Each structure stands twice: as structure tokens, then as C-alpha cells.
Image (cartoon, rainbow, N blue to C red):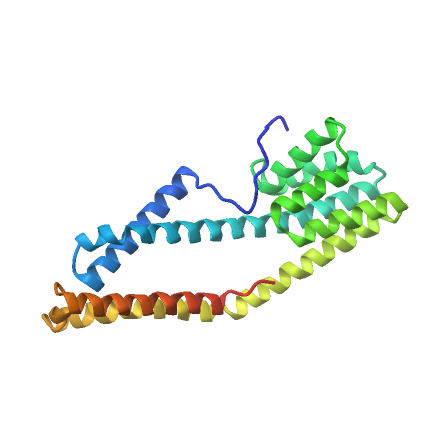
Amino acid sequence: MSKSCKPPDYAEYHFSPREGMLAFLEGGFLVGMIGYFFYRSWIACLFLLPVFVPFIRERKRQLAKKRRQELSLQFKDLVLALAANVKAGYSIENAMRESYRDVELLYGADSPICLEVRHILRGLENNMVLERLLYDLGVRSRLTDIMQFADVFLIAKRSGGNLTEILEKTAGVIGQKIETDKEIQLMIGAKKMEQKIMNMVPFLIIFYIGTTSRGFFDVLYHNLVGTAVMTVCLLFYGAAYLLSKRIVEIEV
């Protein structure tokens, strides 16, 4: 438990070298496809480079969301471990130390929850109160479950409430929310696949017609009017993509 690392702000995401390389390759492929299919010009790719900015931002948003989902799932198991250790007779601070071993076995020392528990334990060693450390985690993670748990925990500790019962109920609520989210994602999984296929259809149509009827689209390339028409088509395609993405994204 000697690893020390500054706890992250979960609203931000920084690529690992591997993730950065993958994002760069995917962004380059996207720009190349747009430049070729809509303009038949690799020079157009230079003017399309600003597309990299929203692409990278969206990829970071997706990875940040995935990390928050992982933290929520792991926090539920931390709360269950805390409840078991408090029931076994440990004080809440010592229960947190024991619970670290449990979540480390479950998720590994590099998991988000282990990073956060190490941060909490360092805070306890520096005489910071547990309630404040939990609230800080809720603020950084933007997870309402953790913030609400921090509030309830503070009230229970001050009023002498049944801490074990609160911990178990909190874990149950988080677990129900995770299961609900899984059910929703399962139901809209087919729609997400349809969305991805429909996003590829314009490229497939252009490729098919361009291959089977060579010269059919020549009037749309390498002239001002054709470039303007394809630019309008690209804008409509982008708007349709964003709309379809918003439709299939459901937050619990």
C-alpha cells in the first residue's frame, strides 16, 4: 500500500501512451475516409484536421465515462466490505484499512477504487476526517451515489445511527442502479449496432457506386459546385450522426 499517486479528477481524462496512439490512428483513419469519399482529395485531409479536436474530446469523454462506471461498481464492493468489517467489530477507520485488502484482491492495486482508498488512508494518517475524504471523492468523481453516501455517512456518524445498516443499504442502492443500467444497455444494444451500421452506409454506398460505375461521381469532385454540395452533405451527415448518438445514449 505504499504506492502514492495524486487522485484523479474524473471529469478529465489523460490518455495512456497506448490509448493516445490508438486515438491518433483512429482519428487519422476517420479524416482519411472523409477526405477521400467526400472530396477525392488527400489535400482536403489537411483542411479536415480540425475534426481531430472533437474526435479526441469525444474519445476522452467516453473513456472518462467508462472509468466512472468502473469506480461506481468498485465502490459498491468497497461499501460491502466496509459493512462486513464494521459488523466484525472494527472501527470505521480500521474497517477502511481492512477493506483495502479486499478490493485489492478483487480489482488489483492499480484499480480506481484502490487508488482512492490509498488516498483516503493517507488522509486518515494526516488526521483528516473520513467524511471529508468521502465527500472529496464524490466531488471529483461526479457520482451522485458517492456524494449522497458521504452526506448520509456524516449524519449517521454525528447522530449515532446504525452504520452497518446504512452501508448495506447504500451498497444495495448502488447495485440496483448498476443492474438497471445494464438492463437498459442490453435493451438498446441492438439499436446501437443499427446506429453504427447506418453511420457506415453513406461510405459504403459511395464506395459501391464508385467501384461499379466509375466516373459516376466525377461531377461532384474537383470543382467548386461539387465541393460545395459534398460539404453540405457532410454537414448533414455530421448532424445525423450526432442526433443518432444522442438518441441511443441513455444515462441512469
